[in-house]
Image 1 (cartoon, rainbow, N blue to C red):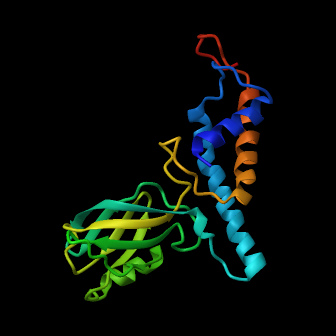
Image 2 (cartoon, rainbow, N blue to C red):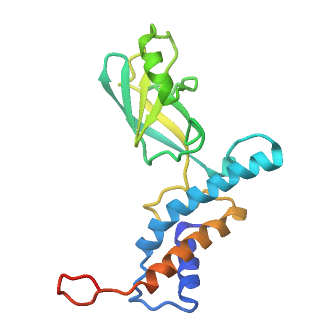
Image 3 (cartoon, rainbow, N blue to C red):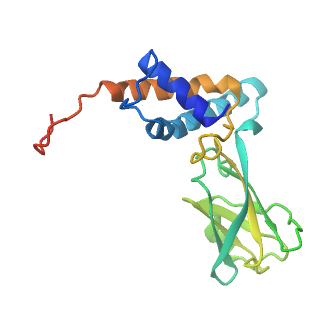
Length: 207
């Protein structure tokens, strides 16, 4: 299912009829609510994995691989990568599950080793590990400790993501059995927003 089709389904649920063209609940507004809705579905999938399999994980269908990410040097042996989205807060590093590097000849490195935030200070005090890269996410960035110079490489990141939120024709990375959670979350919040009285005057006072 594309993001655009999901938006249309949500809008029809909010209005309970064929929505008018000048509706207050715009596609962009619906799209904004879809992202936290996906986060809710991811958390439920994580809980389901424990309940059904006794092991904590997030289903592969929620992951997206982003390639060709630029790497910049912050300081000696420390590099920074701007991620396409803020990683979701699942476990230590499940939000940013895999990080690899590719050189100009197309050779791909082994996966970098993830660190939690409380391991970073300790790792930075150690002697650098040859031929190994250590990484951790901070906000929308991933930081990498590496003896190997990485400026001539590009990075690929595998992240929990619903896909490209800027492209309404892109496929959603959400399994069909978790889509009702996303739809219900969006409809409840958008219906509440639709019922909120709007200040149509310009007297600079709240209603």
